[in-house]
Image (cartoon, rainbow, N blue to C red; front, side):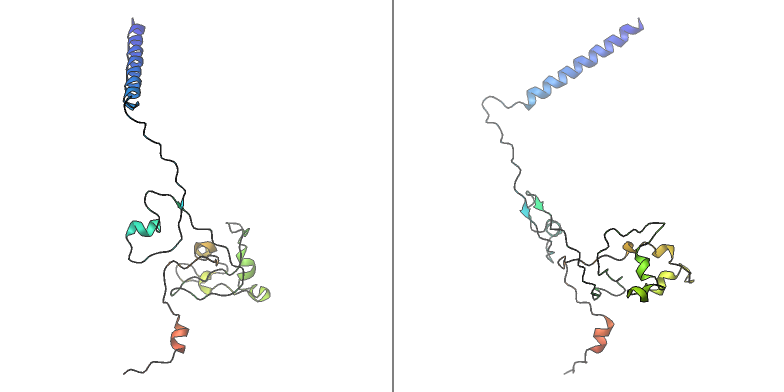
Length: 187
């Protein structure tokens, strides 16, 4: 008797599933007098350049000039510059950018390849700028014998220099350039 109720429930479930399938099939079919709706062909992506247009709407700035109904090409990947030239900073207290490629550098909890050259003890040997003394300080401003754990993973703050275009205009001048400019005469 118990199996009878189970078979009735299974039969009703199968019948309901069949009914839903047939209803979906009938509704989804185009009528005989209607022309079939053309399936949109994937459009060719529009070339999207990484250029920020100030004052444009929020979506326009995100889409970078690509119409909303079209797919945009991503901007090309920037190439790492390996010129070993120090760049000017873009804002006060900006971490310096890395002027050389760092592909394959191991920086994990057991090893930091950057410190081979940039540790204060090795910097003169490798002619590399030593890391700032602030990297040897803990959060209570106490000096440590080795790099502080909070400054150990260099790529948290420092990035490699690339040939990427400037996205936003910047008028920042460091203090040395401000002090070296002669004052203008006021009229």
